[in-house]
Image (cartoon, rainbow, N blue to C red; front, side, top):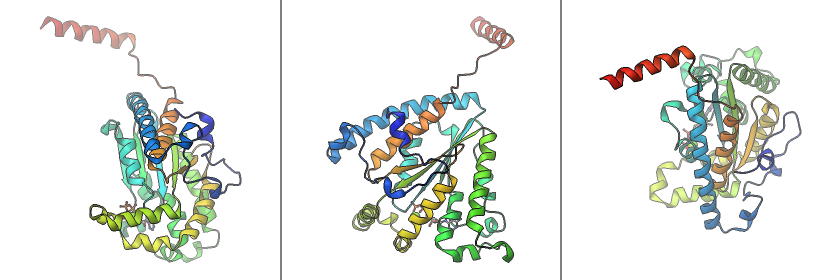
Length: 299
Ligand code: ATP
Ligand code: MG
């Protein structure tokens, strides 16, 4: 397992100045792994990932049995940063009954008829569960900020669309997340930080490999033109919304295996920090269990 200090490096400290360029998307570990070849690094990371996933499965079993806390994971990233692969790997060892995944696309007409948190709130995690948001309410201060015309489509009353709207959204998001946290949801937010060069490489792979053609969308190429606007929007949003109760982690994502190691590690630790135990039965329930045991044996 990575040590806590290493993980701290990727957490955006609440209320502090923060620069995205201080985090290298191609981070390859602090120790011996730094000098490994790509292939060697992949093998080493995969081994570590398996260990993390095993630990996570144990933690999830306790979370589910305990049935009080829940966990919300928010995944945000540019296209081709590996959100889908992250969901696939992180959930691979989990009990499907205790895990939900939701993807948020451009809002529907019905969704636009409500506040932007409406569609989020209704699928926030139930007690005992781990819920993953593949994109989230943060699109409201990212894609919508980069493309102000999307804001116009939101049917907001004109006087409410002011220069302060982004600050207001950060504030509302923080309060919303605080509300969830105060009611037993552990919130972890991950920005998969991929470099512009790596995105180009992955788009080219999608274009050159027939089995990946389906993944390519011309729209993704359009969004790439707004790269620096997105980076600015991410930097501002992460600085304004990384809180004690819902921290952001910037996860280096040029190396998919390393990114998965980091996320699975942070997640397993966060549940471990709750110090959950399997529920123990009380005296009366114990008697009932003994009774049931006797009855079955007598059959
Ligand atoms: P993949 O491409 O891997 O299937 P994706 O998350 O990129 O996953 P798409 O259907 O390609 O899924 O894209 C969803 C689009 O919806 C993204 O461009 C995202 O920015 C956009 N979107 C999500 N929420 C909002 C929102 N609130 N307002 C406007 N656009 C949004
Ligand atoms: Mg897409």
